[in-house]
Image 1 (cartoon, rainbow, N blue to C red):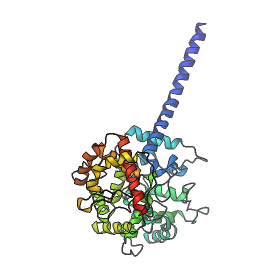
Image 2 (tube, helix red, strand yellow; image 1 turned 90 degrees about the vertical axis):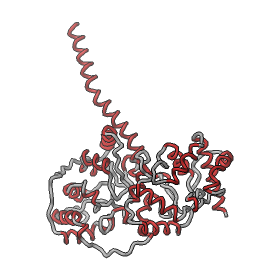
Image 3 (cartoon, one colour; image 1 turned 180 degrees about the horizontal axis):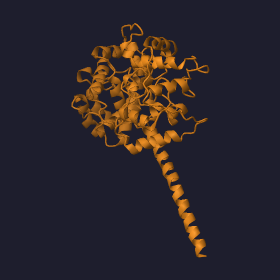
Image 4 (tube, rainbow, N blue to C red; image 1 turned 180 degrees about the vertical axis):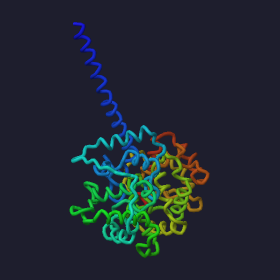
Length: 409
């Protein structure tokens, strides 16, 4: 009898120990999904399916087979300069591990194991690589690998930030295997889209590594429209904004305010706090704008676009909001038209959800604290007068009515 009890104890203990990693893994994956949804899904979409022209599919079978955990960690920690992928040093190691665990737990068909040798350095013919690149890659990735800012569906594989993170073999294996379920098919071999030889692929990689030394196209003079292409994926073709990406409408703003805002983002006077994820994204994007002259061109283009009043998304009491808005009139105007002399932006025409988000940011110190934003410093104490979320919603509801009135005139 004693032997039976001992065996039962051993069996129960063994079973308990065997399921601990399963529960721990399940908990890590669950934490990863929550962290991913809060920090990554706006661009990469639910379950990492990606969004053409904005963010690649990172839940993709072939990407996960080629990308090591260390590669994903480096992208999260360092970001991708020149893209909307900002550095996220605020995400702890545990949170990043959880995100990776979640991505690797996603169901895939026909899983692959792809060995990537990051120590490999390829040699090749730059000229041949340029010819192949322009013929087979440029329509999606841009004539010089600019990626989404070029207006194409593919990421910026010619950007230094990408090339510093991706090894030669990482790019080679991508050309060889493609990305299942996307427009990025295999390009190597008889079954590949372009029937490239392995040396052809290496030539392309060598070209990419030397793209800054190679003139591939005659660059035409930039225009406001061409520079705004960097903004389209988030703010929309007509600068109407995008609630899913937390990108505000822009057409109702004055040229001067748009330029000043871009300068503040570029200088770090806005988007300075990692908790302000969308502001940090804008800070990165503004950093890609060459100079003040280009900012003016972008602003002029935005003002040439047709104004569209965003739909109401916030439930608030507009009557109560009108009473609270009385304190805003001196700067923003009775009709939310703004005041250029006071550098106060127009509010009529802006989405109600963005008004709410920015008032909360002011109250939380995510905006209006930096020394380079004196106008924001004036707004912060005004936001503090709004006692709670309901008061903020009420003000937004009143501004939404002002937007409707402006549209009807």
